[in-house]
Image 1 (cartoon, rainbow, N blue to C red):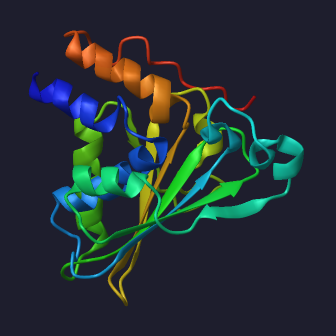
Image 2: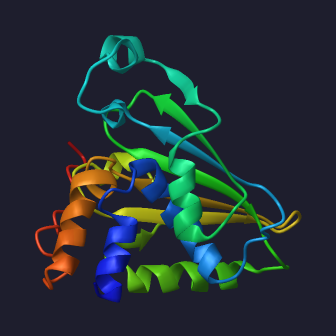
Amino acid sequence: MSREALRGARYASGVGCNATATNLALLPLVRAGLVDTSRPIVVEVKVGSSEGGASSSDSSHHPERAGAVRSFAPVGHRHTAEVEQVTGLGNVHLSITSVELVRGALATAHVFAARPVAEKELWQAYRALAKEEPFVRIVKERQGIYRFPEPKILAGSNFADVGFALDEATGRIVSICAIDNLMKGAAGSAVQCMNLMRGLEETAGLSFPGLHPV
């Protein structure tokens, strides 16, 4: 299998949606060597009801979920192993929270920099990932509603939006990734991986911009 196909398999086919969002939040910092691996890496993922799978349950029933912000896996989530495998990090602490949302996942990762870092260097790290990955977009604005990644505008698309904020006083980097868990976190990524494995254009069949503002 080619390097490209392996990359597709690693990010896509069989990878959980929580792991996908977390991996894409962390990878810019990992590849740039900016993560202090001696300190905990804490990731909070907020997810919609469709992430619960095809089988219904009381917890996925929409009247029950209405108005809810429910922590259902504060520790020990199975996707932690996938994140550690892809990123090479060994000090990842993953928590999952259900919110009143049908589709979408938002990973917010808290990482401490291995050394003093400026925002300009972070831009370079995120742009390097976006340059390599055709569906990764950087979202970081100074004003407006969508200053950081937002799952709402990704519904129906295979895009993954990433953004960041830097606390220069403490060296804490907050890295954010939003995806549609049914597309980039499932079917879309599987098609992307298939394209790579079959020698097709990686973006084939996946250019739909999404359902927003529906």
